[in-house]
Length: 489
Ligand SMILES: Cc1cc2nc3c(=O)[nH]c(=O)nc-3n(C[C@H](O)[C@H](O)[C@H](O)COP(=O)(O)OP(=O)(O)OC[C@H]3O[C@@H](n4cnc5c(N)ncnc54)[C@H](O)[C@@H]3O)c2cc1C
Image (tube, rainbow, N blue to C red; front, top):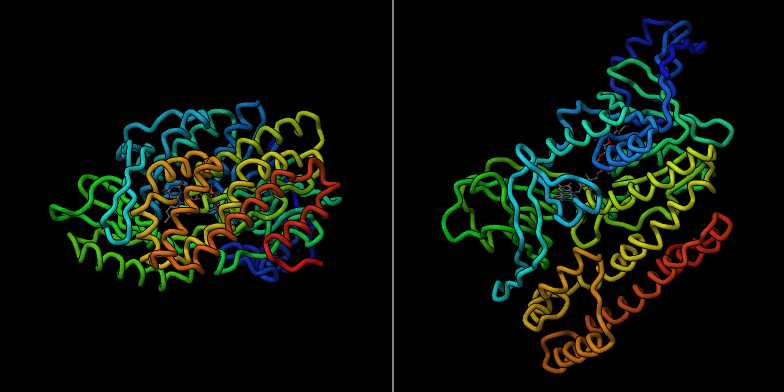
C-alpha cells in the first residue's frame, strides 16, 4: 500500500525544509530532530507501508527480505547509497562453497565469479610449515552479488529503495512501527509490522532505540573493531604465492584477485594507521615490494560479542549490526545468513500470527544464541589468549600440529569449532607441556590457553542455556556479564 500524507508540524516553512533536505543530515540527534521539524506545515511526506521494513541493503538485509518475499510477505529495503555503489569498497570477497546450498543460493557464475579454490594454505610465521586446508572458497565480485540479491528481493515482490537514508526510528505504544528517512533528499516515512536493523557495524537503528527497549544501544567502540586493509597488486613476479594463503600470526592473507593479481589483506585492532603499519611490516618482511599496487581499500568489521538480545517489540537486529562476524576471520556474509535465516523463519511465523511483540520474536534469540552464537562467544573468549602468543610459540604450534593443523582450520571454517575427543585434548596438553619443558613454549602462555579454554567451555554452556522466553533473560544476562568480566548491576 502506498499513501501520501501531510505532517502538520509547527516550525519553519517549506523553503527551509527544502534546504534541510538538501543539506546532509548527520546522525546527531538534534540535527535529525531539526530536519524533521523543519519539514514545515503543509509539506508532503511520502509514506510507504509493508509487512517488514529493512534498514540496510547489504547482504544481510537483502537475504532476510528475500526469505520473507518467498513466504508471500512484502518487504521494503532502505539503502542509503546508490545500489550500484554497494559492495564497491570491498570489490572482491570470499564465500565458502558449502554455504551456497545451505542458504538456497545458486553458485556464482559470469560477472560474479572470479575464481574457485578447493584448498588454501595456512603458513607458520617462519614459513617452514604450510598446512593445506581442504575447504573450498569462491572468490567473487561483491557488487555483482549484491545485484543478484536485489533481483531476488524484487522478484518476490519486495522493493529496494536506493539513496534512502534512515535517520530515526518511529516508536508508538512501545513498538517500533517504522522509520523516518530521507529518500533522495526528500522526507519519507516507512511503516512496517516488523522493522529490521541490518545497517552494518554502526547499527543506525539499534543505537537510536530508547534505553528501556530491551536491546543494548551503545555504539560499537574502537577496541571492538577490526580494521581491514586490502592492497590489490598486479604484475607479480614468479615465486610469489598463488591461491588462498593465510598467515594467522599476522592476521593477514594473500588471496587471488582478477587475472594473475593478488589481494594482500590484514585485519587488526587499534585503527587504520596501526593496521596499515602492520600490513606494511608483514608484506615487506615476507614479500618485499612485489609487482605494482593497483589500489588500496579499507573497512571495519565488528570484533565483539553480539548484543545479548536481538529483538524488541516489532524489532529485529542482524548482520554486522548484530556483530555476527566470524571471530577467527572477521568474515560475516555467511555467518550473518545463518542468523537472517532464523530471523526470517521467526518473523514469518510472527507476522502470520499477527503478534510481533518481543516475546513472539524471542525464538530468534534462543535459536541463534544456542547455536552459532554460543560457538562465537566461546571463540571470542579463546582468541585473546591465542593472539597473545609470541611468534616463536605460534611456530611451535604449527611445527607440532597444534591448533593450526589443516584439519583444525577446516573444522573451524565449517563448524566454528574444533571437535576434540578427550584423548585429542590430553595429547594436545601433553605436547604443550613438552613445549614448556623444552623451553619453546612459555608456561605463562600455556596457562593462559588452558584458562581460556575452560572459560570458553563455561560461556558456551551458558549460551546454550539461553532462555526460552524473555522471563529468564535478566538473570541470564547477569550471569553472562560475570562470565565476560563485565560490570553487573
Ligand atoms: C575490507 C573487508 C573485507 C571483507 N571481506 C569479506 C569476505 O571476503 N567474506 C565475508 O564473508 N565477509 C567479508 N567481510 C565482512 C563482510 O563484508 C560483512 O560482514 C558483511 O558485508 C555484513 O553485511 P551486512 O549486510 O550485515 O552489513 P553491510 O554490508 O555493512 O550493509 C549495511 C548496509 O546498510 C546501509 N546503511 C547504513 N546506514 C544506513 C542508514 N542510516 N539508512 C539506510 N541504509 C544504511 C549501508 O550503506 C550498507 O549498504 C569483509 C569486511 C571488510 C571490511
